[in-house]
Image (cartoon, rainbow, N blue to C red):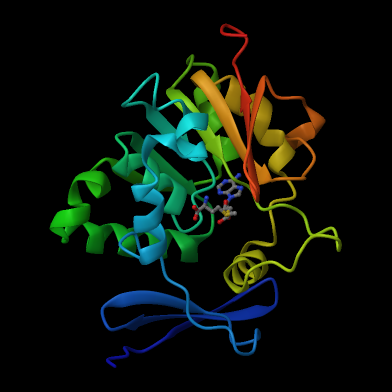
Length: 234
Ligand SMILES: C[S@@+](CC[C@H](N)C(=O)[O-])C[C@H]1O[C@@H](n2cnc3c(N)ncnc32)[C@H](O)[C@@H]1O
């Protein structure tokens, strides 16, 4: 295993480590004992399975790929880019926005590797990664009319002590980003910037974002997609 020198950094009192392992940028959180390194990998088994789910899977239906096959989607909560890459592989042009600098580095690393892989290149080429706050990006775009066909958001759900334990990966992301307690504020901004719809991914039993009833809900066993139509379409 080839390991390059690590870059150590502290976020909110937690120490993290970014390190290149075998040509892939990996993030570790040494304070979470026993947790392995995480990376963004759009060629992973998990992402390939998602892409294989095609346009009949809930994510694709929620975004409306059956009606508008090649939308421009703003994924305002990019994380590791799995949902965003899946949408791009199914035909969307995707702008991935992420505010954690470490995660942006993982996303850019994933895109570089995907562009060098013939099987992943076409979808990776339809993705743009932006390091920004989606609140700020949407607020600055709102006055200019709808900028994207679909705004897609998958904010972390607050820990309520009742839900199942988060996955190890989600725990690392939670410690890195602090959770997404300001997510409610994204809904109105997103509605001002989406030509067709705003889609919010939530845990199946979670309350609605900003307490607002969606126009439509698509329910899966673990996740639910809440669809909000902008005023012009409602
Ligand atoms: C649950 S993860 C998203 C996982 C992602 N859907 C995937 O497929 O990998 C939520 C991510 O959204 C990011 N995020 C939340 N609010 C944001 C905002 N206002 N601006 C930019 N990034 C945001 C967080 O930093 C976190 O990485």
